[in-house]
Length: 167
Image (cartoon, rainbow, N blue to C red; front, side, top):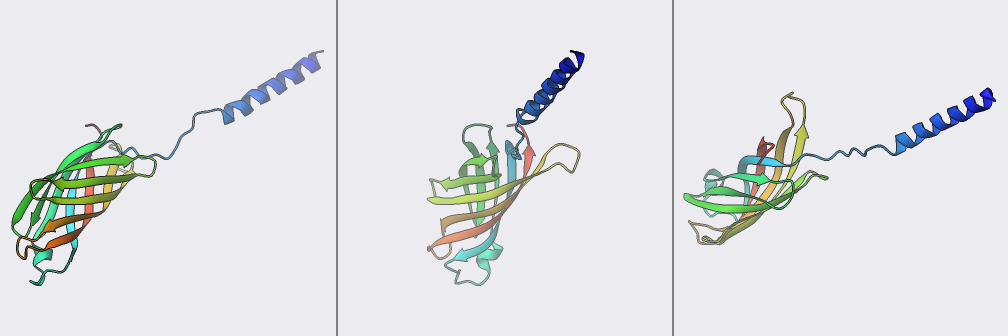
């Protein structure tokens, strides 16, 4: 009788271990995209090309700051310095923690400027101070050239960092 009881007890313990392995919490590789980000918009190309050689490349840069909440849309501001004209606008954005992507719409209703921002959030834990997140991607903005009056598409490289994990 003791042998049978011992055998049943082994079976019960084995079954409980099997269910524990398959029924535990699911840990995913989601990035924590919540936080406050800041960065720069570095000009890559202008279409159509400026008639004055290298003028657009020298005189155009942008900076931005935006907040990404855990739920809901994020918001922020950007400033674009384009050939002597300063434009300030807003960014409406959202981030997908599963894929680590951030998408934003840039616009300034006063000047008619509009564009998009598409970036990848890369979280690293190598510094020992918590999660450090880099932001890298592209942005495209449509503006009216202050020199030629022609509507141009400015393509930017986006480089940024998470400044804080809280909003």
